[in-house]
Length: 116
Length: 115
Image (tube, rainbow over all chains, first blue to last red; front, side, top):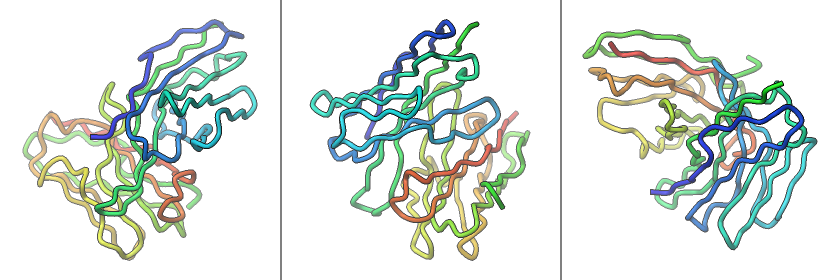
């Protein structure tokens, strides 16, 4: 079973601080690593994503760091704001050879609370 | 529509009853996915449809679960003889096509409670 392990389960950060969420994977066939943000009562929304040939990607206050040799990637939220309070999921994409389908395998999520 | 629409938003059912959950994908999106989100468990893949191809049902947890997609658009997820462990949020997502993982758009989900 392909897995993506995410930590921590929950995170409390002061406004203006840096939030860091980590993920690790096992399957070297994963070829795309997105992060999703989910607010209560809503579906997950794509936040930022990276491919394994890149070590870092930055979009505004959000940065993904990717370590291919360690099979780890992380999300950094700089200058965290109360509006960033949400659940964050890392994910990894693979093509299953059997059905040839395209799936995302998700981590279990991190509930981020940014306190004023 | 502008987004992925799911109905109902909430469903409470008695154990043993059948339920149907509906997903209306974004117009023009040929790929459609169902995921299940249980508390503290992340998102679990259930089934994938791509155009007129046979669906990938590898994630369905038991034969009580089935799904269909009519006319390459609307999809219905059916759970027969519901059990308490089926209680979860069922999320549907669509994308332009196979491999367009960057373009997944999720609906807001159906919260199913089996009592």
